[in-house]
Figure 1: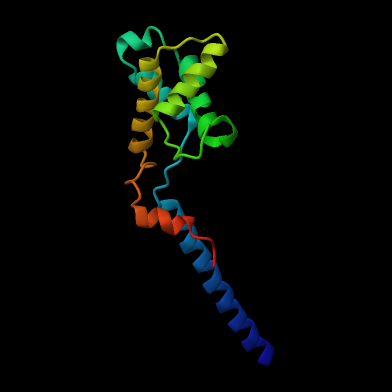
Figure 2: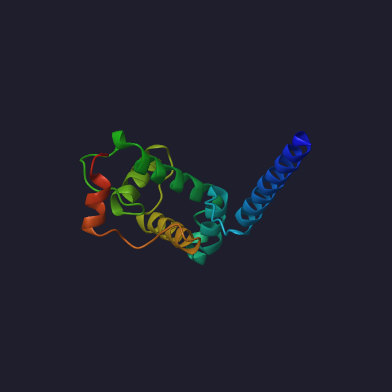
Length: 146
């Protein structure tokens, strides 16, 4: 008799846990998740270039420009100074332009800026760019973990 009651209690607990997992899975699938895709960003930029730029800058050029700008953003060894790093800023555009020129890909500055502006537009469109942080918010991020 005791083992029967224990079996019923364990069955009910198992059923509750199974329903909980099912509910969590359903809830997770319903959430709207934005995922950044390198290929999608390249496609977006290439498709939205001004017609005169699109005759000069092809999809492979867009990829090249974006890759070198990301290299600038991610690698402190290629940046001079300790200033704030801004995606799509003039220093990153100049770095991409200079590096690509030494590699035999001389792109005009306005074309590089257009590519970076369109990538920023793509990021804003998928919700990856928010409002700038206030000085207080930045200070909170820079505090050491307690």
